[in-house]
Image (cartoon, rainbow, N blue to C red; front, side, top):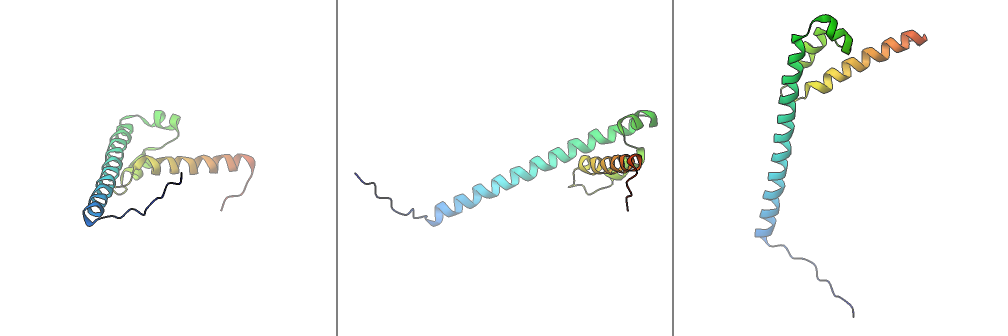
Length: 102
């Protein structure tokens, strides 16, 4: 027995409902991103309570933290801080191995 499939016809009402669901999902993703950025901003600002020796032990400086926190409110400062730390670590390893960096 062969099953015949007919194309699904969408009504205006179903299209509007799908559009509303997509909008709600996008709003939820935006809210989650903002919450994570806010939470990370709070946690990174607490690093400023540490002394310089402790910060050096984890590979960041006070200036790095302040610079990461100066970013846009929609941006997650943890990614900026990780990029700064990674760049400094790469440069230090390159100097140790004698690789020229521009």
